[in-house]
Length: 148
Image (cartoon, rainbow, N blue to C red; front, side, top):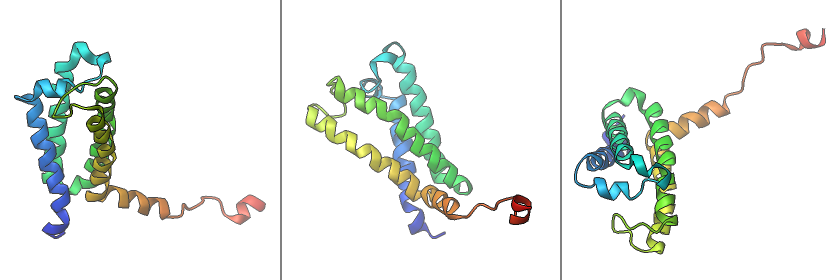
């Protein structure tokens, strides 16, 4: 596969790894602002754990080409899972990452599906699923078995 075709996947990998490192360093308090209140007592752990997951997904997207489809699905699932934090930030009016108005926090919510699509499309995960869905399933029973 040519490098230009891999570029969107690699960029996503670098973005995830960079964000994951931010979870483990100076940006931790910003990320804690996005942790839903139900996990408030574990906010630091949630931020650290999600940072490790982001780093792993990022490195996987960059280096593990043979598993790109699986990593694409995992990355999309991760983006869906953390969406709760973005919703919490909006609902509770929490300022973080320069999002200091309800409008800015609301607009941020619409970016999450873009990340999910980016993960699925750049890794071929969506295309792989579409190919599998289009393949007819062979029936083990033929007409003679069914009708005698």
